[in-house]
Length: 261
Image 1 (tube, rainbow, N blue to C red):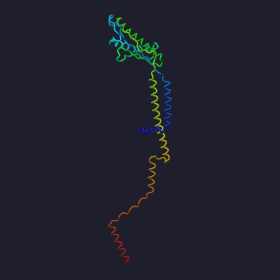
Image 2 (cartoon, helix red, strand yellow; image 1 turned 90 degrees about the vertical axis):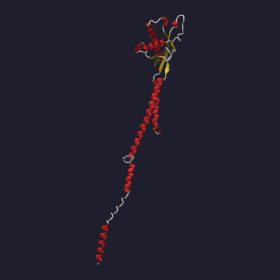
Image 3 (tube, one colour; image 1 turned 30 degrees about the vertical axis):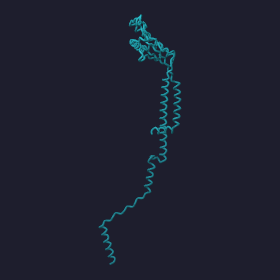
Image 4 (tube, rainbow, N blue to C red; image 1 turned 120 degrees about the horizontal axis):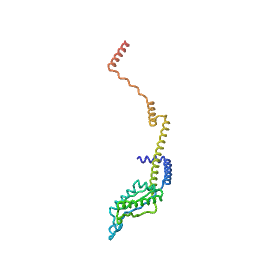
């Protein structure tokens, strides 16, 4: 029922809806043009042991020798690169794009590096700088631990794109927000205009009825006219008591007899 009533209001104030939706359309076009496009660059790095880590005489496939210690090492260098000190160091060198580094779930010692920026070249440059920092930090912690050369871990890059890809999410979110807000404001304005128009109609009818309350004026006038035309019935005489009536009859007889004499 409320939906039908609301639909009737919108149909009555169709001109408000049309103007409002035209404004919303213009704002959506402006949003598409003004909200900057975000670009993302990404790359992966996997921690590997050298083939002769299992022995010179028994070399092994590094991709099959993914020991738990490799995942631990990847987590250590990730924490260092994601620190505020590392972010400030990168910004000082001119790499100011937002970046994130994390372990890929359920994939062992595999790191995912992503960067976002409105400038695709800046996103790619920051991605490369972060991956280089990971290499430097990996070599540093192994050097400090005096790891034997035959067991030195290396970070092998994988899926490193040469260009940044467009992220449509930010522009789409802004567009949806502008459209939703515009529709809500348009509907509210239509209801306000309809309410004001109804109030003006009531005031005009009230003035036409002499300034009295609009709803009671017809009924009151009809009641006054009916009371003015109705006649009040005459009051019935009170009944005379029995003893008084008999006394009056006796007096009448005496008066009549005296006249005959």
